[in-house]
Length: 189
Image: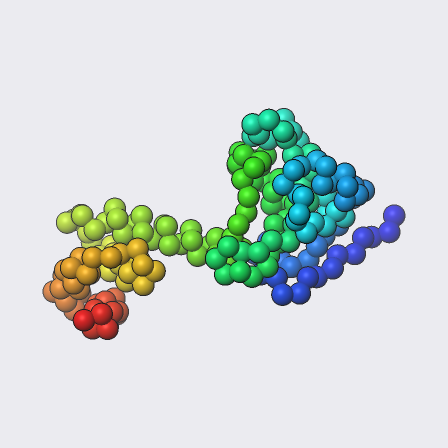
């Protein structure tokens, strides 16, 4: 059996696990069969040589299951760069994580990671800001999270940032986190 060759796509955001290569599967599905297996493939740039059959028993669908997963070339909603939504990634989303098959990947891996980081740090900031029993290490994390969420537009009230800066001046005056929030507040004043 001859080994199928993969080819690398240029100018796509690399996936942390799959890179930028289209890896053909061992299944021989033609483009028409793949497109007919799911309404969402119409109008998309697909690579039928990457198609893998779906296990519809594991899918979460309202009326019509997805018959095949196939690599799809997409444009990121945030950064507008192209990326590949890999067939294996789709199989994981829809069969293991339980996403509905109509759920679509609209962000590239880099923007998804950035969004996850932002949400995680905002959640950590939100749970720590009202606490009075923070250790110095936890307080440093709170200050750095406040700077991060402010820079990303999630923290809007300047007085909260100023109060945190004043606490940092008293509590950890020589720490780098204090200098970070000081410089942020100096720019904003």
